[in-house]
Length: 506
Ligand code: AMP
Image (cartoon, rainbow, N blue to C red; front, side, top):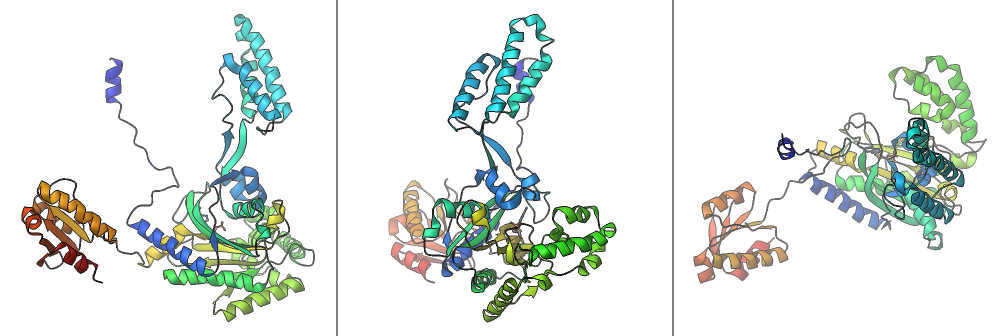
């Protein structure tokens, strides 16, 4: 069989969106737009400005901010080497010398995150392999040496380590520091929206590319009114969208000191040790790695045990206790209904005091639509000045799912006017009419090829158009255009200005 014949039989591969990612399509995207538009409007009324950070950042930023021990950083990030553009694409054995020279130069000038040791090893190994290649008969003996060279070469870092962002708080803090925002009037109030990436097991309401809308307040005091106003903004936003069945859970996790959270964690750990045998494997491991996370447990048989554990509210220092009481007072002043949930925790040291979560209806097991909390130590941890901080992140996919479950989907709007034209004279007029109507803000459908009137009207109905504008030779000659109301089939003749006036009538 000739090569051509083989090619003919090969079917081109059909591509599909990668597992855990999906296309958002009309009409659903209209709901996404409404949600995002509402966020822009509501957040602006609270004095927030929009920030659009990049979707990839140095891996270290997330390791530092989110925590190297977390699932997110240890197994869920999409990480890759951002190969330096100053290196040749892929070195062949013949050009290895030149390539290694390039790597050496770039790592010396600091453009590659190379440490000398790796490079020296590769060079040494390359010399060995090169020597073996000179005497071709020894190639057999050299195969392990070549293998070693490949392994060493793969360990070479040919660019910076970057990751797709799994969340955006780290980026916002990085930007606050990078742009010296501490010199602006404090606090700085920022919000963002966009895709995040985590390699989680996909299920309803959980994706690998998902979308968050979040806000952060950085700098200024840690006044409880700031926490309460941020939560008020969130609830106002959900209220404007008509999100149903929301519950706001709040808690205070104190701060990392012996007379506060650290002391509590010690006490918790001691109690957990006593009941270790009755816990599942995950919780057993967490006694060592992150005892607070045991409180998160959803396992049926662990619930009764968790209920008996010491509670953080009874172990807060006086300052944190007062702060928590004041946050609750401030929420009440704003008519924000909340539920105290002592099991709501965050695992990282710089999270402190206020934490909150909002759940909504119709989402099954993945029912958290928003999580947030205070993180006064984070900016400093990323190399900035001591700075107070608090923020939240809403899962937009879940928010949309919940709105859809409760029937809050805007109907997909059909065209306002479908222009049924016949004849070349009418076509020129139709183009002009379409432009005038669109300029006036109407949705107009202009068929690209000539259709018989009957066919055109059929299409107009199928698209759900409100009106059909009929333009034939007669209409163009008389300057009297025919407008058909598709709902009742009635027709009227109108001049161009009268038509515009009629269609723009509220
Ligand atoms: P987090 O950044 O983990 O605090 O999450 C904040 C919110 O983002 C959660 O309450 C969810 O609504 C949403 N979220 C987190 N991970 C995912 C995911 N993989 N898919 C969809 N939504 C998510």
